[in-house]
Image (cartoon, rainbow, N blue to C red; front, side, top):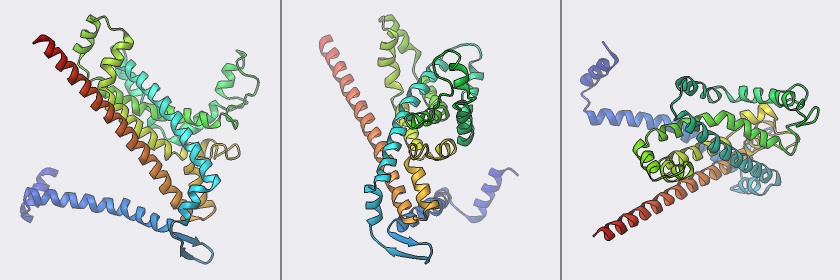
Length: 320
């Protein structure tokens, strides 16, 4: 008896209608989400309102004092700005790289299927492996970059890539290398839905490559751009493994982004309430950015539709 037959037999014995069976499944999924998401969030919020003393094993209600401390403390503000910089660089690099790879993979050429499979490997490996690989390549003494660029005279001997000025940028580059393949497949899926007739018509009108991209490609991948923006931004703001494995926040606190500071609040300083408050601030910032992306993209889409409707109305008026 197959799995579907067993489910059907169970439903028959229980006397459930299709609506009752569907409701049972939905309630089960909701309860599962309540247990693994809502309950931990509620407990974290409770912690953010209490000052916890680990030694005395006590907690004192302090309201939103810890939220204020997390907002106005210089260390938290510095970590937030570094997270914003890290996310901004990652978003820009990921959009350019993933869209470029998608445009290439959308063309017909021998071995395209194999290349599509290989391009996913950077995203498939863990962030710790990515961090290890990039740490080796950026190693001043025997790293790949210095080994290639030193003989060419581009950099000096033992050039330090992860210094206080550029360490955060190179972390964003490593993260982009890891996340860009995911964006590539979002863009590639969107590109394959564009009718080829639109490109043929644009070529007949003697539209150049840039004009075809702006007027044909970009309007059809707008929602893919929105998805990539949201995914990369959220992943960049919650990034921890790669930063911890590559620099642990160093040199000094140069690369101490907000998730790393939250980790230290919680596990090194045992400030559970402050860590929870900072975590909610991190969630709020990422949510605001995601909503802003959505508002901007949908507003642009509505404006494009209105402009297109006005052009059609003008053409119809001239023809009549």
